[in-house]
Image (cartoon, rainbow over all chains, first blue to last red):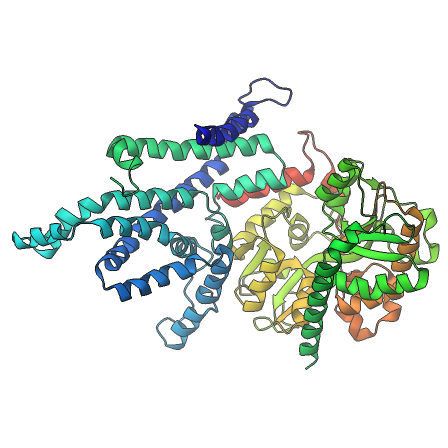
Length: 266
Length: 369
């Protein structure tokens, strides 16, 4: 109840800014601006495209990593955990700058590739969508790995063993027993990563090009540089509504039970 | 050798200033220093800038007049407003740029400068364009062609904005500012398109955006702040940038492969401004008369290579010291002054040019044809 008020109140104030005219009263002027300006639609599309690709990449890399962490010896697990958590504790800004040193035109990787003759000219790894993806996946990966790992650790190891003893191949035992049982963790990871990715703007600003300008970046410009708070509120409200819509549809498709209980405590 | 000394001195100054401030801060705020007539507070940006001010302005001023100078900051409009609203104004003099001054003047936070109280001889050495009603220009920066000297050895570098726009003759990645409250650099786009520098204003907006369209494919990074721009140039990630020239000179002196071409640069001032309600109005004018002196400005420029506003400063600098400064007589005549009146003018839609063009910049950036 208290939390509800804490989250709802700012949202109501935001809606107030978005729909109140300069002299009071209800207005759709800001909504009209949003609908008529193609540039903002493009930024919304970029934001969702980036967030979806990041989520899928995190899932593809994060699941095997979490599986390895859950099944390996405890010493190796400590190492894997440290490898994941140490970058996690470094600031987002510092990590983005580190990527410039690693992946730049004259960065370590490209210098090595060119010197070894593998490529003739430096590869464009930065200031494009690839750079943004590398940076964002690196930052968000722990949010995918941890929930999956939590579910896998609690998995009754006798279940896949039972499948094996009944004649299932390792692949089959994984696909029919382990994967379905770990799905809540995977879903929780996807929800977390997607939510965070939608609001990113430092990483796209530092590692991206002009095709990677996200809506968060434009909201910042509208609010801070143009001091156009009503329109900024309109943009923010639309973002929240769109994200909410995505989860509503997801909940309908998968079943609300699973989405809300996706923290692995099913 | 010389380079090393410069860096270490800088670090020591910065560290020293920070620790002494940290140690003295709590005591200063509770003393009755404000009550006796002998103190003024100057709000500036900290770091090497404030350290140099203390060395060449505050200390000699204290010695000459007996009036103590305390530094504080950063001189943000919001902080000045908070002081005025609470009725406890602690700052007397600000060191800030014209956009901030216009915002503060609009909110009635500043005193107009009484130019009759300033030394005419010193004032005449400072260009008229810098005698703003609410601010007197003292430190000049600008948007210039800053380039990596490994890609373009000096002499073979892009020497005009037209060269920067010429991707066939000058290969390499460009970097231009976007975000962070920076309006599009439409003036340099017009100069690249052939408009002479003394004919830039009023801007032909459509012509400028057409030139921006041609620039776009050459830009490999739209940077979000000036420190980032210098970083990218030093590392060779981009080869030529439109950014703050004096920052390029700072990097050059620290040994980075960076240099500055001043031709066609857009000049803008940081200013001395007076806070309305400051408690020591006479001391403030004594301070201004002290620091607008050419010799004081020259000493400052030796430490922090921004441009002195007084032409007299260059009588106190050697040719070598003056060569890299943005306002040296040679460099000054290649550049033009940012026309704040044009940018601040309100159009038929109720928006200032700066608001309208910043918004157009964002849309232009996101939407491609």
